[in-house]
Amino acid sequence: MRLTTVTRMTLPPGRLSSFVVRTGETPGRRLPVSFDQRRHVGEGQRPGSWMAVSFRLPVGVEREQLASAWMRVIARHGTFRTAFRPGDDGPALHEVDVESGAWTQHPVAPGRTAREVVRDVFDEACAPYQAPSYRLCLLEPHDETEGGVVVIGADHSHVDMWSWHVVIRDLLAAIDEPDVCGEPAAPFAEHTDLLERMPPAPSHVSERWEAILAAEAGAMPLFPLPLGDVSSPRRAVVEVRDVLDSAELRRFDAAASALSVRAIALAMSVLTRVTRTLADAPLRAVFPVHSRHDHRWHDAVGWFITNAVIESDDDDPAACAASVKEAMALGSYPLAPILAPYGGMPVRPGMFALSWLDVRRMTMPTDPELEIQHVSAAIDVDGVMIWFTATRNGLQLRSRYPDTPEARANVGAWLDALEAGLEDAAAR
Image 1 (tube, helix red, strand yellow):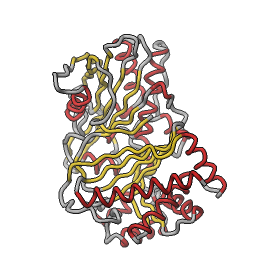
Image 2: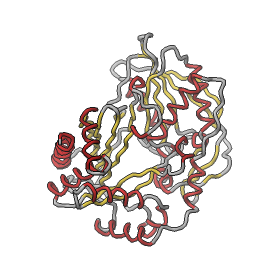
Image 3: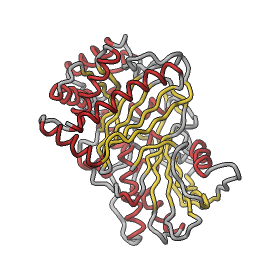
Image 4: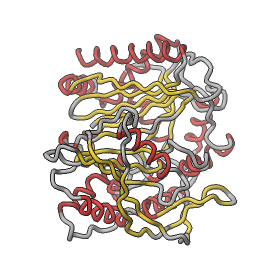
C-alpha cells in the first residue's frame, strides 16, 4: 500500500472507462451534516476536493461483474446514497435514490496519460455538490494476463482513508459471492447525529483548546519555520519517502516497546526533538484523529476523521505518549461548540498538520498483491501536511507543502532531519 497523488499514481497501459450511476432528481430525507462536512462542502463546488483509492482486480473479472458488485457496495453504505445541495444555512445533505448506470469510455489521447484523464474525470464528477459525488473507473490492461485496476474517487465529505479499505473488502466480496447480500452498514449520518447529541466537552478540554490556540495567536498551529509568501495558495511540492523498510520498522517497534510506548509516541519524540533543534519551538500541529470508537463504525464508510491538535515540548517518549493521548481526547468531543467563539476552525496560511496511520492494526485488506494506492488530488496549497503510514513493508512518509524557495529549503531540511532521526531510532 502506498500514499501517492494523481500526478504520480501508477497505472498500466490499457483502456480506461468509468461506471456512471444516476440519482433521482427529487431529494429525499434531510440528514445531519457533520462539522467537518459543513466546513469542507461550504467551500463550494471546486476541483480537487476528492480522495481516491486504486487496487488490482483478480484476473478474469468482467466489467459487468464489477458494476454489479459496485451497486451492492453503494446499497450497503448510506453515504453513497446521499448528496449535498446548497441551503439557506449552508450545505444541506439529503438522501437520494441511486439507479444503476452505464459504462462510458475515456480515450487517452496521444501525449496524455491515463492518470491525467482520471484526474479530469474525478475533478468533474467528485466535486462537493455533484450527485452522486463519486465515480468508479476501470483500467483494463492491454496485457490480458493482468487483472484490471479499479480507481474509485469520491468527494472527501463522504470518505476517509479507512473507508477505502472497507470499500475494497466489500467490493471484492461482492465479486466473489454475487448471490450473497450483506447487511447494510451503519450509516455515517447516524454517527453525525449521535455526535451532535453528545454532552458538551468538559471544561478542561475546552480550556486546553483555548490554550493551544492562544499560543498560535488564536489560530490552528503553523509550521514552525518560514514558508515564504503563502498569502495565496501555491503549487504543491509532494515528496514520498520510504523511511524505514520492514525490518527497520520492526526494530523501531521493538525500541518503542522497550520504552513502554507505542511506535507513534517514539515517532513524536523524534518530531519534537527535530522541531526544537531546527525551529527552537515546541511541536504543535493539527492532528487528525478517527472517531470510530464504537465497533459498528469499523465496517462503515464515511468521514470518521475529526481534527485535534497535538503539542509536545518534551521529547521523552513517555511524555510524547501523554501528548498523543491528550490529542485523542481533544478530538473526542464535538468541535462546533468548542470552536464557535473562533467562527469555526480558525485556519490561516502556513497551517501545519500531521497524520499517523498504522494499517497493520486494521483488519481490512492490505495484501501486497492488491497493489493499493491511496490517491490524493493535485491542488494548490498554503500550508504543510505530513502523513506517516506504517505497513508490513515499512514506514512511508509523504509530505505536501507550497512551492516557494523558503518552503523547499526549510521543510526539506526539517524532513531530512526527521528521516535521519527515525532511522537512528530504529538502529538503536
